[in-house]
Amino acid sequence: MTKQTKKQMFALAAIASIGLSASTVFAQVKDVVVDGKGEIPYVIDGRNVVARSGAGLCWRTGYWSPAAAGTAMAGQVPVGCECDSDIVPKDKCGAPAPAAAPAAAPAPAAATPKPTADKIKLSADALFDFDKAVLKPEGKTKLDELASKAKGIKLEVILAVGHTDRLGSDSYNQKLSERRANAVKTYLVSKGIEANRVYTEGKGERQPITGKNCADKLGRKKLIECLQPDRRVEIELVGTK
Image (cartoon, rainbow, N blue to C red; front, side):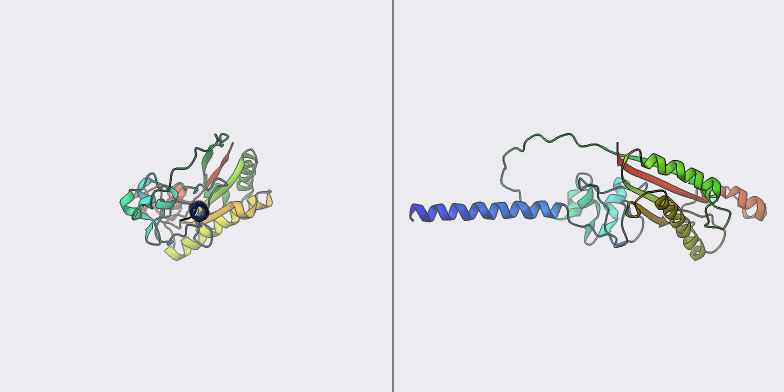
């Protein structure tokens, strides 16, 4: 084999190696589409695609846990295989990819701001009248404070989750919780928050706080008062300081 031929073969091998590395990097930032069943531990958009930060990190919701990351599915593997691969057991994520050839050590990178999550629970009675999804004046005041706080950080996402008490049908309460969450989003957008930064979700009556503490025999007025903690909107801000 001539020296020229050997040089060409080495050059082709180098190009193939570069192409492989580029494909690997691209795969690391691919869209992660969840099945949309059960509790999803990450923020998702209308396409069921997991929302990411500018650094490619998956944004966790208040329902995130190691167990949830390993059980909520994205196709054939848990969603945590892409978002939290250091937490989800390797055997759940299939066979590991072949090890890449050792690369030269990269230059030290500048420190990246750490994400900060500030979860706030707002009573729905402070935002809405009973069985309503129209913001009350005192509810707007609370959201004004929230919008001001959001402008004090480099905002990545706001997650607004509406909840109801158990009074009424499941389907009605689901829609009511969604309307309340959307009312919060509409108001925050009117205060200068970008619409694509605000994700909404309705949980209906599925996540009560009161549990079995409020007996139906109390009578309707007292029962409504007892169930007040269940009628709430939970808002989580995620960003960097």
